[in-house]
Image (cartoon, rainbow, N blue to C red; front, side, top):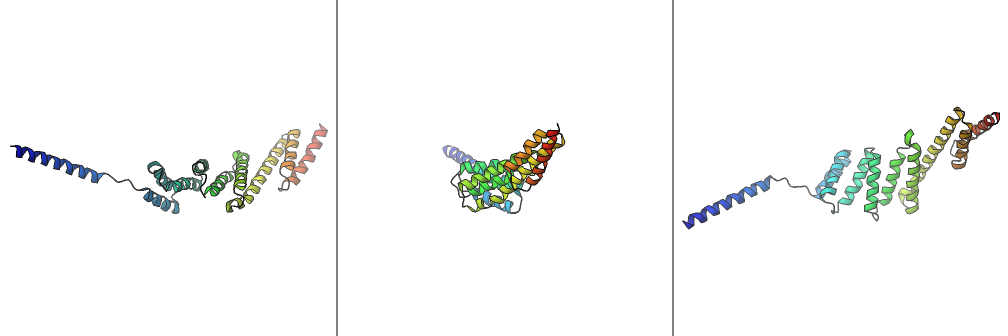
Length: 219
């Protein structure tokens, strides 16, 4: 009788163990951080940037202390930039700089942050704000890493931003002039000469200054 009981217990344990083994085989194994990194880089190279973000985000979620987490932080930012999601890209680049301040990619990250602002300079409603943020960011790069290759690339971008600001200031002045707000217009045109000399619009500003002074005297 005892032998039958032992046999039944053994059989039950064997079946339970076998069932657990089958269940374990059906559980999908989570890819490794390296596999996610390879998947993300492959998607990035194929310009599938949304898919790349998903793969790199998995590294941040599942393997935050992996050696691939730095790569994930950087490529998420780069992917947002490629998608022209500039606000998201700026946030991601700033997070990278905060988390990895000593990383060798920091000059590149600051440069890319500046580019995110620069790419929005032509948007009328954001023109002045983004131009100033771009100048500020590129200036910070030049101050922190004056000899870095990315710092050397900033000068053309900074000059373009200043030209944009000069044209914007001139445009506001012309608007005031046409609206017959000559004193306000005169102030704007003088700002062009004081802040943005030799950027291609000062001759036009000088001409409008003369017109404004004549109009003011007539009043």
